[in-house]
Length: 602
Image (cartoon, rainbow, N blue to C red; front, side, top):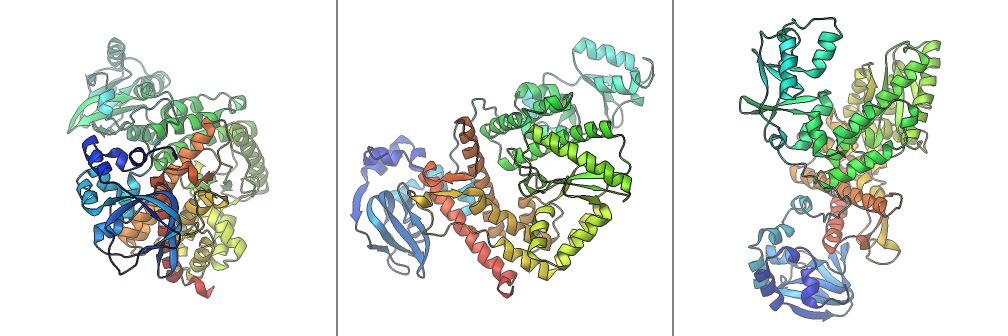
């Protein structure tokens, strides 16, 4: 970039790269080249507002308020726009390193705000700026449009049959039209699929004279015609369905099948789910992780958010876990009492995109010696099979082989964490309170009931908040473009501070979900955080997840193992600015949380 002339440099950075040619040419003609020595004060809080937008070519500036450094801006980043928009100087700006900058006069900057993409870059709210700030990279060669409406995938109108027809007639009609389902015109309308003919007719010993009204599924689960493809995926996976009627208004206009979605992308969750369902044995487990990575890459390149991708990955992993546990039951015999396989961590929050180490536990009903022996053996088999599928063993040992007990024992354990929040109790609660059941028939409502007690456990919440605040983002001077401070752990410094503190707010608000965004939304509904804070933190979390997944997929495409460690130099100037803004927003939230939970008293 050093060889670029001023105009080419300006054109290479956001949001100038989004300007139409005529507008950019006018901006380029107005560009001024300036130099300021280290220590020069460019703006003073409460003083004269800025008359220029500055774009840094070389050097750095320090942004301060009341003597506290908020950010250090470097090459390709901009300053002065807040003052230009508000007409006030609200921050101190001092040259940190000898500064070569290009500046744009106020009148020209204001004229450029007429262009929406340019103006959006300088939106007043951080949440709004973060929504469209990530520059995507080609991490996958296949990039389907996953937002297209499902109606575009329909092969024709729905094939219909009267409720008085027989299944023999329905089978002939499906064969003639080469479809896998027929809509039954009844009140309410129903559907008969090829699977129904196999399971509800042939397997049940019924004959072709059986009326379709006796085997139909009704009422119908339908989706509007403008539903995006990825949402149809979610519905089919959640409901375990293979056919989804599509409606426009009250009219059924067609039926979308799992096969139609398979044709949409071979790397989509429906296709991977089919592969998981067809696994014949343990020797087929290796390679599962690679398939999930391929799917995540295709979905991300297709424009899906990591939060959405995480939901698909969780559903696939649950299906795999179910398959593995059924193999174990086939080896060991039927379970002596109902049980549940619990997952936690990012998998429990349904936020995992690429496979990480195992975080699971086992809980069963009746406490007998036979049950303890049975589930001990089941845990050994399941943890080994998950490792074969690509889930490394948890370094901290949070796996079912170590964390298995009857339900009553789990209830006592949960209550103990709330009543006596020792450092070890807080560590275990922070992990296991993100639990959800991935497989099994045992009702975990008693555990949910204990967790709900956290709403009134002020000592526990304060102690957990203090523990959460140990995860600190980089300070204003700690994140630089070059040198040792250019590399940092994106999970440890950005994602974890939000996850851990959202957990505390979620527990206090009584959130029923362990998902981070849903915990923030619950805190908003409970009046624990303001609306603008909720929006900013939610968008900051989405931004950090997008940034991490993009970089991890880039590492994989380059033949490197994915990690959470990134370099500031890997990001565009716009992304660097947004990253610093995000870290600052987290710091502000942490300060408020410290006061809210009075962590200074612990």
